[in-house]
View 1 (cartoon, rainbow, N blue to C red):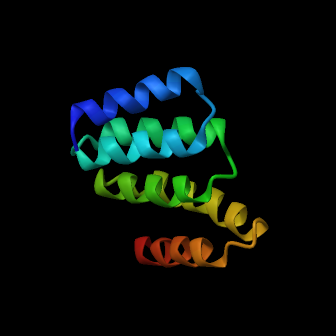
View 2 (view 1 turned 120 degrees about the horizontal axis):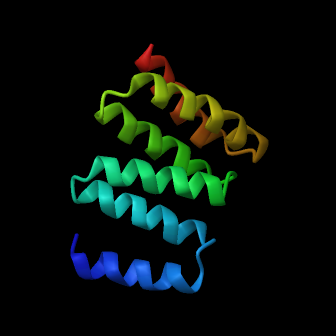
Length: 104
């Protein structure tokens, strides 16, 4: 997507740095621009601010997988699966479990 979109997200985050959805959008924007290193950092920041935001673990692990950081991806999934299960989000937990099994 565009740099303008990234700047709009940054501006909104400056007003509300703990907004999990904005942080997720920022990470996904990095990924869509092909900046997986930036995306990983953004996903890690998302998880630090909003540790119960399950999609961050899943997409963060996928980004780590693209960087061939398999051990880190597995660790992120192992963190995220219990988070999703605790929320009753069996769909997200299942997707993360499938990715974890694929990485083994």
